[in-house]
Structure formats: C-alpha cells, structure tokens
Image (cartoon, rainbow, N blue to C red):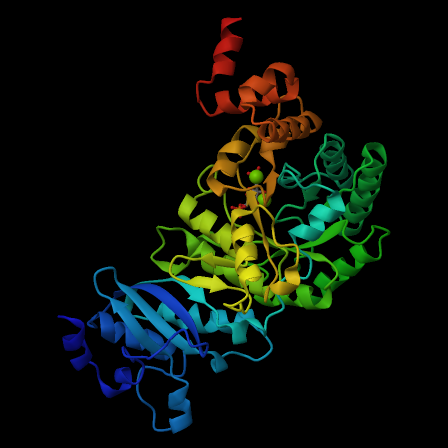
Length: 486
Ligand code: CAP
Ligand code: MG
Ligand code: MG
C-alpha cells in the first residue's frame, strides 16, 4: 500500500495524530523527532506510527470523551513517513514539555511508554531537533572545554585523563597514589570510575582527602594545574549533595575539581540538579548503562546522538561519546563522531537534522564566518555568549592507549576532546607514571607530525607502550618485529 492507501486505513483516533501536510515543521513551534519503526501486531506502518504519536503526547489507545479542542491542538503529529526505510518523523508541540527546561520530562514523552507498546516490534529514536525557543529554557553547560583549557593552560592537544584502575578495591591511600603517579607522569586530569562511591575499603571522605593531598603534591612538583573528577552519584539527593559539599569544603580551588554523575543510573534529574545547584563546577556525565538503549543493533531505544544532545541541554561540561570503534566499546565513526561534533559545535548536522544552538542572524556575515571557523576548528568559538547553548566536550574513553590516540584524532578530525585512558596507562609495563609519559609522548609525536614508531626510537616510555599494546592486540608492528630481530 502507498501512503494514501495507508491514510485511508486510519481510525478517527489515529487520524488525530497525523498531518502529512504540516506546512512548516521547522517553524519553531515543534520539537522534531525521527524514529525507526517496525509495526507489531496487526497494524500497518502508518497506524503504528499514529499510535506511537498518540501515546507519546496527549493520547492513549482510544479516543476519549474528555478531549477538548485545546487538548487536540497539543497532539503530536506524524508529519513524514519513509516506507522504504521505516522512518517516521513526529512533530511535538513545544508547549507539551515541563516549563523551565526539564530533560527527564521530555525523555518520558519520547523515550517512555512507547518503547513498551505491543503495536511496535522496533522503535529507535534516531535524532531530535530543538526549536530555538525551546533551547532558551535549558541551562546548557556553565563551564566548558575553553575554561578547562584556560585553567590547565593546554591548547594544542586533547586534555589527557586517566581513570584509576583496578576500578575498585584500592584503599583511599592507594587510590590517591595512582592518581598522583599519573599527574607527575604528565597527565592533566584523573576521574573516579563509574562505580566509585562510599565503599568500606575506600570511605568517601578519606578518598577526597587523600586525592586532594596527592593532587596538591603533584601540582607543587610539576608546576602545572591538575584536576580531579569526583563521582558524586548516590542513593539519594541528600547524600549526593553531602558528597558535593565535602569536596567543595575541602581546600581544593575552584576548577580543580568536577562532579561526575552516572547520568543513566542516577538519572537526568541528578544531572540537572548538579548543574543548577553548582553553576561554578564542571559537570561530568558518565553514561554507564546507555548501551541498553544505544547499541546500534538494539531495535528499541535511542542513539548516542540523542543522549549526547540532551546532555548538552542539561548542562554537562562533558559527556562520553565513544571511541568510534577505535577502543574497546561498540560504536561507529558515524555515530560517535556525529555525536561529538553535535555537542561541541555551534551548528552541526545530526543523523537527520541540522541543529544550531543559537539564533543565527542570516545577515550576520561575521557570525556565518565564525561558524565556519568553529566547524573547521581553526578557532573554537571563544565567545560562548553567541551560543544559545554553550559547547559540551566529548570524552573519548574505553580501551584507548597511546598507540590509538592518533587513529582516533584522524577519525575525529580535531583535538577538541578529553581522552581518558585506564588500562591504556596503568597496564604500561613501566607502570602508571611511564604510562602517562607515553601518552604525553604520543601527543608530542602527533603535534610534530612524526609517526609514533619513529618518535619511540628516542622515547623509551612510548616504545614500551607500543611494544606492549600493539603486541597485545596481535597487531604485528615494525617496532615489535625490530625488537624480536634484535
Ligand atoms: C574506561 C572506563 C570507562 C568506559 C566508559 C571503563 O576504562 O573507565 O568507564 O570507557 O565507556 O570503566 O571501562 P579503560 P564510554 O580506559 O580501562 O577502558 O566512554 O564509551 O562511555
Ligand atoms: Mg569506567
Ligand atoms: Mg579509556
């Protein structure tokens, strides 16, 4: 059946949630969504699309007698269907959402009941477009990559982090020691891992104290600023705030710490609470658990791009966006790099939408030029005030090591990201400090356009990293062959 025949199959209830002649979906009145949809049960594509539209806005599975002319105005509308690719576009009146910029509320609409409906066999939210009037309701990041670069005085390379490993079971003193080793080895930043909390073998208050002391020591010895991202996720709001206050009341200076929140398991409300309560702290969104929704092979869920766009709206300074298959986690270049660019740039193309974060006056030639500069990353727009929503920095993490840094930069086509390496540093044969040194050397090689195997001839820590990580991956490398032939 073609779309006209499908339209004729709709019952009055379904017909109230479709308008294939919607004059201008991008007129600023709608939040637009694109879903991949496979109908389930006995419904055809358009019937299923309308049922999804109803359930994700004002409706349920029958037309109800209590509807009013106004409530009908707030119906979301299926405005385009691609029968070949099973793609459905739905326009959501922007007044549907909770006023004041609530991410949790939107997810409950467009990633809520609809995933559980019998009428679908597959439903994946692929991309979202926010109208400018909606963007204004959202906090967006307060502190960004620009502030981090300024604080660390690092401009010509990615920001280099580690995660202390083993993930757990280190005492607070041992934990702080590993963090110290990375910092004196040259690393900028250390993050708690996603499960770090208040465990009996590493009490929270002791962890904060030991980390702060070790960080101060590293700053003194290296003469460089250092930062720590503390996981403040907790069972309840009060405990989360208590952890934040413990960190703030330590003597660590502003910008030397970030609050990490497990945004998938602790929830969007926790993310927005931190952003609103602590506008003077970097907010770090760890996305552990997102794979249940975002894995490309999952037929039901949403994409990394959708999660990342919302994280920026919620005001996180940085979120993990994936290693584009270079590291250990799933994720494709298209998915991960599209997400990274979408949260970093003023305007960016998603999978289906061109999204700008500011109202860009068409006549403002300078602004248009700035956008080109921003996109080509010659000058990352310093003047964030021209962004409706400030930039959010991609974190590239998951199985990376110094030998994979350049391969990732080549996929990302810029250095405007944070890279966190856990095993990539602590599995180095020489230990953490040398692991950090190898990472710095990999950056130096990149800046000087020298292949790391060449650079390793005069940099022992990098040579050891290549030997270990490339052999470990069973990738025959010139270096390993040379070592074997010696
Ligand atoms: C990385 C990591 C990160 C994952 C998150 C881990 O450790 O600390 O949590 O990378 O994945 O626990 O695996 P390694 P993503 O560097 O030792 O792999 O960044 O894709 O959300
Ligand atoms: Mg981790
Ligand atoms: Mg990593």
